Length: 305
Image 1 (cartoon, rainbow, N blue to C red):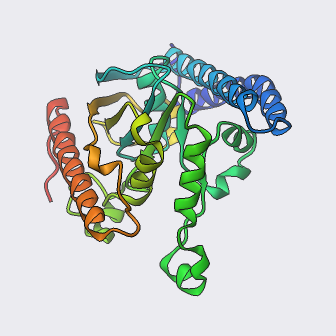
Image 2 (image 1 turned 45 degrees about the vertical axis):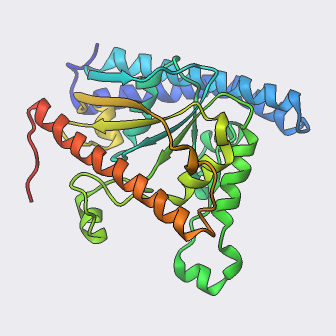
């Protein structure tokens, strides 16, 4: 461990280690992606997608091993779920920092399939990673405001169609499909702007979640409800590299999705949409209470207004 080093020096060493690992793994991952680009849809392309996911998972596992070796982080991972590397799972988690991605990879490791993320379309241009995300069949979503849709009604439903296509792409593959229901990272300022009824969460966005459930249908093994708590506060990525993230609690619950929520039209059926919103609200209220309990348990206490 090098946690005793000055924080900025540890940050530089950690960043270099992650960069070197990225450059090494880019060779096999990008080779497979280029082959995939030239391969028509079918079993061969599906096999290539599996190989890319396997390689990306090992890439991430080495990142985790390096950070565990360089830093002193107290990991409190409570896995109250049974997962299979060959299964399909939908994950909903609260979102506070970019570090959440690494935390989730550390929590699930090799016991589950590699993550599928819903990403903003602009992220496809991220150097080295953008094409890798495409090769992993990550859906790139174009977020449109109400004003943009009002000016161009053809934009309505584009995210829904992208969700359907993405789910079809990995319908027959092992997948751990991650959805941050809040749609953005939590801050107190965002919470106040939203007038969120929750103490530690933003208002959840149900649409994409509903369409993912519908697209996967009964192939989905279960819903994994993940609660991430940083007792010392949610730090940014640079703070993480500098070793300032000291304690993380991750709690995973395995839930059964009510059968009727797999079959309904979120877009066109107002009654179904209301039932879905009610189910999500109940899930989110329970998560908010659980975050308060975990913070109190860790000694940080419950924040008061």
